[in-house]
Length: 428
Image 1 (cartoon, rainbow, N blue to C red):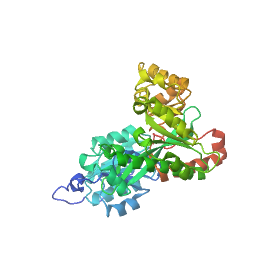
Image 2: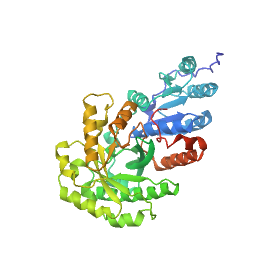
Image 3: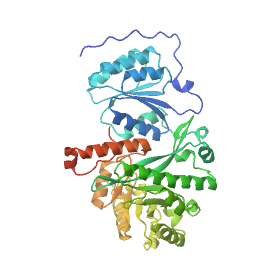
Image 4: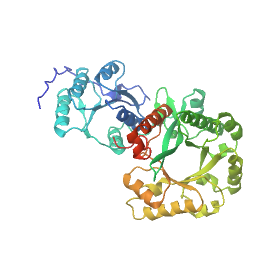
């Protein structure tokens, strides 16, 4: 390999301040992601957003150079393509600017190329992290963020009041694919609330739900229901009819005008697959009459209930047998390591069988390992959700993937493949 001469080193008698020292108080950490493959950029951004970070994406070094004049990231994730000169140019540009954040190289190329580019970064006094070889998994990226203390939960200072978020219209909904495990087809999606704060970035419910007032929870539930129905219509316009799911607390569910909201926002066509409202087992099992009333109240609307965290209160679940729940979502404690754990596997199978005995669809949540997904198929589990199959993503990203899916299915090769692939796979 012909070595590319390094540019003159930046002269600085005093080491530059670390990026985290310069970051405004309360601002979410920022990562730049440079990769010519748009799907990889989006994949990395989704992981980082889920960890509480903000991101900017660039296809090449030109975008990076322009962005460095505006913002200073805490870390730069840089892919080394087939022609490594592009990546070397990015490293040199960072060095010439005296960049004081971290640089994470990524590539499917050989170790010699990675070592060469890393060496140039070392010469420029950059904080070069151990390179990542592609393909890598979600856990590898999360470990990097955690080791750098960038992927920690939002601090107390970063928490926001739900009422404030509602007032300022910071709320948005992300969608996670739901996959038929046997057919390997997309069958639905679940909506998750997020807050996009002007300072703290994208925040998960743990940053705005604790301590929320009941009135705010009712308002959030009304918005969530309307947004899920509206999103379903948007997806249907792309030719994809998905049954969407949304989480609503039981105490809020009984207070909102469900009939009015559904009639106003539901798609007006005969093949509408309906909506699923997730309620936790803990909330519903204590009042079976309420559960019965709700299922009857919602039936004519094509809206059904599903039990979340199914199996946690196993001893009382037999009391639910007569109630028509559409789905029973296995508690993630049963799903984790069900493919290898000799204790967890039979428990998982028992809960799946119980769901089927109730006449319900068994949904495994929190699937993160291929071995667990294969085991769940052998156990007869119907649907699955989790980082292995697809991460929660903004609606525009979900729509983009649906368009890609529709386009690929029109091609002869895709038609011969027999089914859609999971969205936003966990490996990159």
